[in-house]
Structure formats: C-alpha cells, structure tokens
View (cartoon, one colour):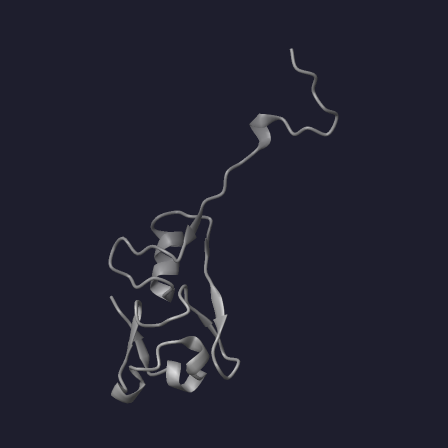
Length: 101
C-alpha cells in the first residue's frame, strides 16, 4: 500500500474543467469570434475558452491565433489585401477585415 502524503488531495475531490481553443468552430462560426465563444459556453457546455491576444502595428490588441490574418479574415479594402501581417496593420486597418465563415 502506498504511503499517503499529508497534503495530498483525495482523487474524489479533483474536478476536470473543459476549455475550448478558439471557441466552437464545428458549426460554422468563425474561430475567435464572439459567436464561437458564446456557442462553446452555452451550447457545448465548456467551462471557458482560450484565445490568443496579439498586438497590431499601432499597439491595438486583437484576438487572432496566427500572426497573419489571411487564413481567417479578408479585407473589404482591396489595397490592404497585401498587408497580411499584424506588424504591418493598424487597428483601424484591421477593422476593415471580416472573418471568414
């Protein structure tokens, strides 16, 4: 029989919490969108979600998994399509991008 440590927590009292990475994207919501975050909490039942916070060129904080925006968003301003890296885009420029479904 193994010796029990004085401060050891009994297994019965340990609980598991579920956190989703980038929200629920299985039903067509764009990753890291408010809709994906709401869905994973309300419908899926996760305890929370994890997201990546990055900084744009002007210091604006944005939630984005990749350092490039091209995989998850597209700009409504054609001239900005070539500027895909967050280090090249200001918060104002990023506001012209729309999440891909």
